[in-house]
Length: 296
Ligand code: PMP
Image 1: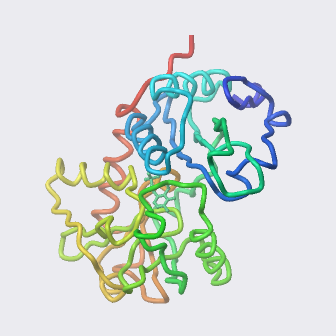
Image 2: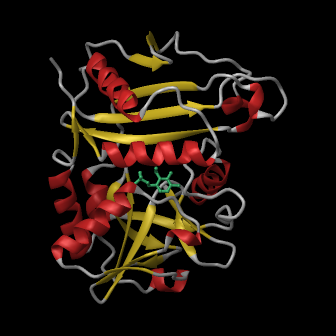
């Protein structure tokens, strides 16, 4: 894989990393006006490809962003980018920005959106992180309220999440929990959250203000198959502190246990039995559930 030079899809062309450039007048750059997806490829399988494309096109519709490609064409472009990079396992970043306009906000001045596909090897957590779990803190930065910018839209406006990441960095931890304006737990800076108490899993309902994560949905589906009860209900930090197990889900993080929250040790302070079971079962579906890339 490393012998193949990285190529990036840019509006129908395949260009080198050095040549993958867009205008400084792109409203994605000037205003965060655009959307994106992060997708995993596992042994040549684009995991949950349809779900990611559905979320991308729903986000586009919601912000009235035109994508020149149909979902089928987007899928083909993704597969071609993966093939040209010779990658079997990695991460796909799909970006659609409003495109170049003038310095005003008006998207009507941006005649053509930019479509970018980057595939890369993924720097992921170490095996011991999955076994030991992460230390996290809660932060003062509140989640965007859904009636301002709905977190279901996976927009390029990630400043809210970046402010959380800055607070996590200052606290010396890798991830942090965001509450909403009413003090309910919503999600991490880039992951959804589940807590487990007495064998029952709970995740915040998306109306509280969280991205509807595709890994979250996959875990809820797995819970159904494996006979675990999973509820979508609001909960507070107290419920996180006293949970038997806590884990985060996301495309990059997969299913990762939380060891400590705000100095409170969760359960036995390492990945608990249900988290471990779900991670194991999750890793069984990642090469099957999705769209296979042909490398011919
Ligand atoms: N919440 C936020 C804010 C995220 O950026 C992500 C990563 N896309 C997630 C949750 C997890 O979503 P998914 O499982 O679809 O990657």
